[in-house]
Amino acid sequence: MFASYEFVMNNVSIYLQPGYRIIKTDYPGMPPAFYQHMGLKYHVHHLILGIAIRAVSFSVAEYIEWNVGYRFGKHLKH
Image (cartoon, rainbow, N blue to C red):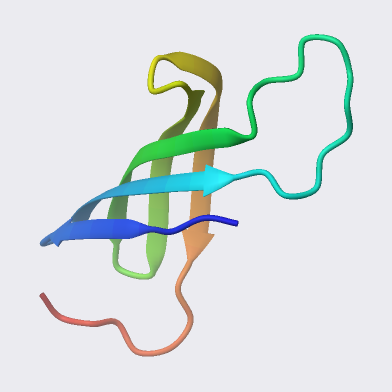
């Protein structure tokens, strides 16, 4: 479960997503249930390219995400 905030400037957006892992399995070295996503997206017509970091404790990165997406429908003018 997570909340999200996205700040959009022309074709670039910065987003922050604090979240809490609800369904979890216990294993040695499991990270805390509370996590954070911090990312950057770039919109090129209908194509969306992005990169994000998923972290815990606001300091330890779990992994880096690369995002590629496509927006269906009419392209919004900024």
